[in-house]
Length: 155
Image 1 (spheres, one colour):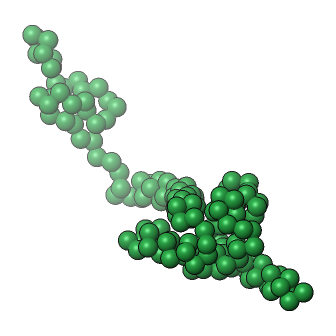
Image 2 (cartoon, one colour; image 1 turned 135 degrees about the horizontal axis):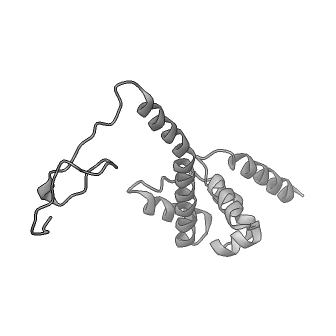
Image 3 (cartoon, one colour; image 1 turned 180 degrees about the vertical axis):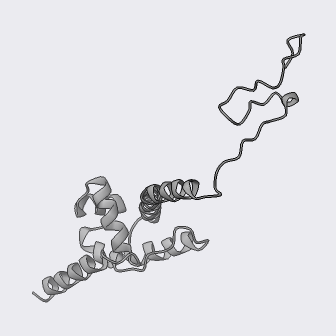
């Protein structure tokens, strides 16, 4: 009975830790959501018993951008008894997905800022024309009427 109470407490701690990005639990929970996995499938991927997932989940989450990421993952994997390569892939996958989501969420804000800046007085775009000898197109949509074409047809 004592073991089942301990398991219940560990499971509860794991669920709580899943709400904090500083714990591996948050990355594991995000990975499970992204891939529609339950604990059994996750344990199989990590090559560990399901009962060992709380031990892994309660570890501190290493920074995927840190130079120490590889050694941190190996240390955690050894402690928790999981496959270090699978753990590193999960952590990197979740990190990349979260970063892409952050960029996508901030994109509309950036577009609004650019639109606001363009509408501000003094922020008008000034017409610039490329020199006719460069072969570049003018930077405006207006056709260049003041530059005659050479008679030999060259640009």
